[in-house]
Amino acid sequence: MGRLLSWLEILVIAAIIGGIGIATFSRITPGEALEIQLEADMLQLYEMEADHFARYGQYFRPDAALYRAYLPWMEEYDVDVRHDATGGYSVVVHADLDGDGELGSWRVDESVAAVVRATND
Image (cartoon, rainbow, N blue to C red; front, side, top):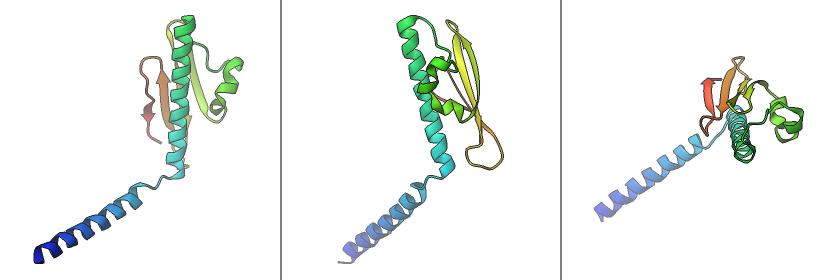
């Protein structure tokens, strides 16, 4: 009986610690939500560029008026675009997503299917 009680106590303690962990780490701040959305948008741009290159053998210019309807998030941020139709592209976004007055930078280009955080926000 004593052994069963010990296991029950351990189970209750583990459940409490698990609940505290879930409550603590499941909260996303508004700044973190904006960063997740920005990175998803930038990855979408990467996929669009990769598809365009596979079909036509060149990259499109992301800041061209023709593509603005597909990339509305570019209007919301300070965006630097570098483009060479056959050599590649890079898009760097500068933003203060958490409102602390410090700009962060995120970059996507043709070299890797990931958004690179150049500087922390």
